[in-house]
Length: 439
Image (cartoon, rainbow, N blue to C red; front, side, top):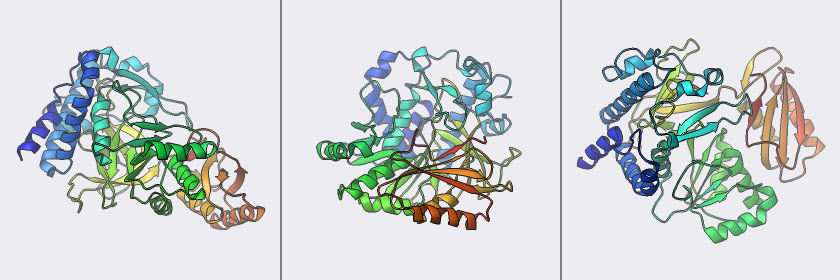
């Protein structure tokens, strides 16, 4: 109990999080502070609900106060004293969106009293829409890195290979992961085997398509390499793909829900695999309907996130572009934080000719049913009622396979969707599952 009390104090007050903390202090003591934060997260994540709520509300009050008093944008949008009624005040704040980000000068969102070295300029990928630029807080990478390590079950001598994923962008004492493999995987299959043998990573972490691509390469070459744990982020990982990865890698595969804006774990799977636990220390997650009103638990809506770590540029009630619902019941794993059941990106729905929408997974499964092993695939909708399917497969795909896909799509969507298939050695562009140009 004393350990948890101490962890709670550190989680709330974070003595090293000073506005004008010199960069050399953060750089020199990064690793010791990282281990303290990892210890704090491990002690707090299974705390009782009262403890979690207290930490979250006190940290929420701090970020609301900071946004109100130190930024031009939020000063007129946050009413009252956040230290008295933080949750009530939060719910009265208007939503923050990508459109607002694009239409304003970044300086209006920035904390004017924070040390300049803490600003890390980042942008969204811009694959589906015009990129958004924003500032992350370099100091927040400390706690978020610690949480990522704790969630992935890191031990002292473990090594993690990140696959086509650069996180975090700033770390003064070397890379967060000991090994980084950012490459065109198919063209470097031999080098991948050498990389595994020489570096002996115990964990891998990366975008879903990249991890699937790596598994396909190892499977095709008959390489057996067991990992302690595999973690995926980004695109939807369906049940069949998860089973495939667990077969190839001989370990359990877990999802972490992240976003570029959050720069860390918003929610994550536990051993029970029954929903994603909200990281209540660092985020507040709300589920809202189309009128931006809160919905009851277990009812689907838009995911809205308030980020408690970014003191450089506060993200308050940010409409992140995902859909899901919350279950507010204790999990058999012992964690009492609410669980998010993730429904997918709001943009991961395609439109038929009659205007109806369908989830992308409905055509993903259809394509997988009629193709040989797929290294990568990507879907793009440029016009209503039409979709482009780009495939990169380990084996040549026959005309019969293509005909079967087109016929199945015609039957499945009642002739309301025209499908065009493109076969490539590698899917162009970044590892993005769905490009929606209707947005």
